[in-house]
Image (cartoon, rainbow, N blue to C red; front, side, top):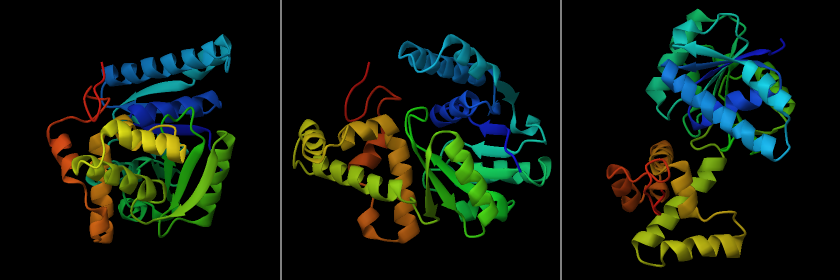
Length: 283
């Protein structure tokens, strides 16, 4: 099967980035949102990101136009065309919400369509239990999607070799680097990254060092492009907490216990860049 038509569900940070890279490579993209306003917001972000690529001479004006022309508006999951080859779900990190979408699409779309989730930590095996487990896979893109090369390709318990090979080859066509991962809580990227961020929050809570010092140690001593607390603000503290809870509940191991300060900040809606206030303040 050749994948040419791709539905991306959710036009937020990850969804609009995924739509962007597929459209740039000539795929027909059906960007699905709940309202026309949300869809237009996503398109405006994609257009702005294309302008940045244009300014850096990565693309031409014609390539920008061709990319935007490849993106089609879909309002409501129920309106996704039945002849889609691939669905990539990129909504917020909630297992029940994601499963509900796939359960609806199971009878709506053709039997050959592959289902993928961009989840950063939720079990692919559990999500696939409501639909077509052999044609279900994880495609965990990194943020910002147009820039970052890595895509974690996560096999669920029943994901077929055929499905994996198709998605691996598709990822290469996007000029991304696919890395095979099996279905355990947090996969690889967040199983390693989030405990580091969580430990940085513990160090701040315990007064071991200031936020600036913690970030400087990791940037200057470990050559990280940004410190863990700055990175947490960039990701969103609510997302960090949700992933830590998946790890904690998935492994039943106290080493994954979310830091109380992280929980308190999320409760106070200090989520980082998205709210203008986290470990640092943003205008």
